[in-house]
Image (tube, rainbow, N blue to C red):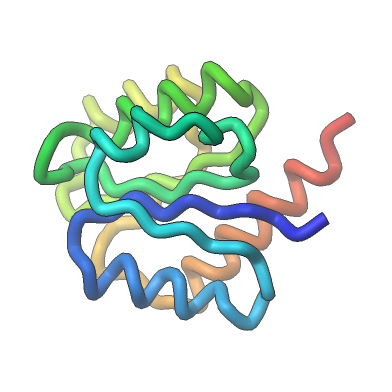
Length: 125
């Protein structure tokens, strides 16, 4: 089955760049630019990986991570942020987020993080 990835990022250039970086993997990638759109999704639980920025124009990406992880507790989440703080990282870890990338990040690091997240997920019973 083709993995489904949701990228939540309010900066269009970063969102598109992340989607293009994953294109060679032939995963199904959906892009969202605001928290409200993700929180209204009826099929959020159909995604295998969530990539989310923290600071969004309409809220905090950790709220999307919390909703996603309520639906799929063992699913991987990658948090990308331009303003890493220990408080945000601690909150994310309590939610179950295991991977953080600080902006700017190299695309090969992003792709490797996504592949590792998905391989761990596929290895789960």
